[in-house]
Amino acid sequence: MKLAGKVALITGASRGIGKAIAKEFAQNGATIVISGTNKTKLDETAKELGAFAILADMRREAEVQNLINKTVEKFGKLDILVNNAGIFPKIKLLHEISSSEWRDVLDVNLTGPFYATKYSIPHLQINGGAIINIASSAGLKAYENFNADAYSASKAALVLLTKCWALEYAKNKIRVNCICPGVVETDMTSEFLSSPAMRDMMNYAYPIGRFGTVNDVAKAALYFASDEDSPWVTGAVLPLDGGESIK
Ligand SMILES: NC(=O)c1ccc[n+]([C@@H]2O[C@H](COP(=O)([O-])OP(=O)(O)OC[C@H]3O[C@@H](n4cnc5c(N)ncnc54)[C@H](OP(=O)(O)O)[C@@H]3O)[C@@H](O)[C@H]2O)c1
Image (cartoon, helix red, strand yellow):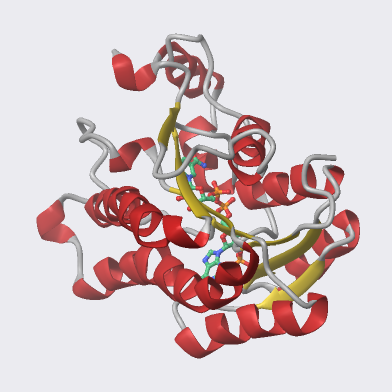
């Protein structure tokens, strides 16, 4: 029970990586708040995990502000924020991306974490806390034929903001860390893992011999969330990719 007594907010936790993090944190004693935009799916997941659900579109500042306010109104405090909600664009070369597609990805993946962090900081400053940013291996280097530039830009920015925020708020005992997963099987990646041949190829890309699972990410998030396990860790950027980034 590494998170007993803690209140944790995980954005975009109706499914995929966010849901696995919420489950792991709940199993470790935390009170969980989850957010998303699809009410049916969010309510279903909240019921399954015993979490509190709040609808909030990360692109809308007022909704994100309301998400943080409602969390604190309901549970009296906030200890852990996981900036997880994210979207992946249609694969296109840079010159084919429309400005609205570009903006949409940046709005969810980068401005969303900015809003959530901005409104969480005053609460996290009270007792100290932890922020965990879910970036991507695509935020660490360029990949041939990846062709998701808005996504790469949003994640690279989140990697650097992790370090900026870690320095800005270390004096308040707010630890800010970042996880950069390689390919993890979720709805986001289902089209790249839809045939046995594609799965074999993807497994082969990882030195450890397989692509990632949502539990791989949840375990890393628990480490960063736990004051017991990582009290001296802030500004860390963890490649979580079966060794792919060191090839
Ligand atoms: N899967 C991977 O291989 C991988 C690798 C590296 C990094 N990541 C990152 O990990 C995070 C989670 O990805 P995932 O694979 O778990 O994706 P996913 O299965 O597609 O889930 C995305 C989650 O984000 C929420 N979301 C999407 N747009 C939103 C918005 N505008 N406002 C609020 N919530 C929104 C979704 O809820 P609603 O549908 O209800 O809005 C859902 O709960 C993302 O930041 C992603 O970039 C994933």
